[in-house]
Length: 413
Image 1 (cartoon, rainbow, N blue to C red):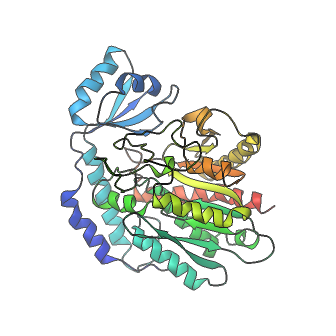
Image 2 (tube, one colour):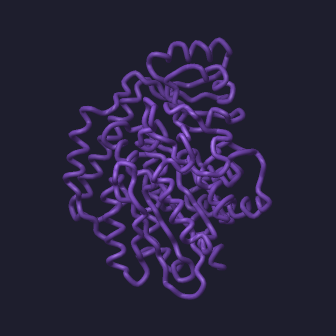
Image 3 (cartoon, rainbow, N blue to C red):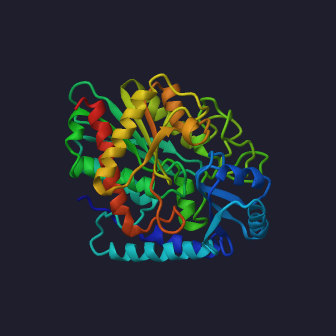
């Protein structure tokens, strides 16, 4: 197993920054049972952050966080219309505090030998360092890719795995596009570990892999130091008072047509133009540099347990949707075989919610990648994003089995 050095300075800075962190005392976490109707009657209220099941979802459950100042109004509106809801937490800050304690305990346990493990969440610099170690230890198959820099100047690194034999077809696996979804980089790192020294090394014989564990490093770091539930990038849009762009609404394919916002303070703000974000442009370059050989694009998110394929910009389906649906269900079957975790498989726009300008749509519609998916990983803990460190191992192991299916399919096995 590869080692990983402890970045004490980075971790120390994270602890020091806690005093200035976003405080969620009094914020309520709710589960509603008709999310589309709830959205209609509360869309004008400020301070509402949908966590799972986008508000445009037709019926079904949804989780959302509500700021203290509007909680009374929010509950009153739902009660007046007899809309069912549950209060999952009366104080979201308690979830944040509990998660910090679990993370610190896991970090302490992992310091004995400095080896990488999957019982805690790693910081961006630690993940980059691990990629460098893999490239150094496996020069015959691993090549480090300098993917550019983020808005705040952080180095974005990806890694390509290839045995170099014959015609290569590459799955492209980016993660961490939404900052607060910590489990997605963990799955990407586990995939890398297993492809180089674990149970999936045989998949490098027939297939090249490109893995980018943290697509939004500025936002990812911000969630450790300042605001646990930050979603967007950390860029400044000229003339706007709110920071950040939803990088998964920033791709130039049907940009801003649906499921995206032109308001900079919205969680789905698509930017003032397509590809305004360097992080999105960096991923675009990686894909186009290898597009002729990429046969699958798998972007990892959380949470909700969905395997989604295009299109996101509308409810229309691609011509080859049956192929996408078939492979999506095979991925689900492989994951479910591990410990019973099941996913819903379908088109984002038709079966879940509109999301124009998303990376999976662009990868299929512009880059021409046949098998393009968004995998929404399981939630955990009380709030979904706070998957406890002790549950990471189970999620990464089962997800790996689904990703193996993709590798075998495009490798012809």
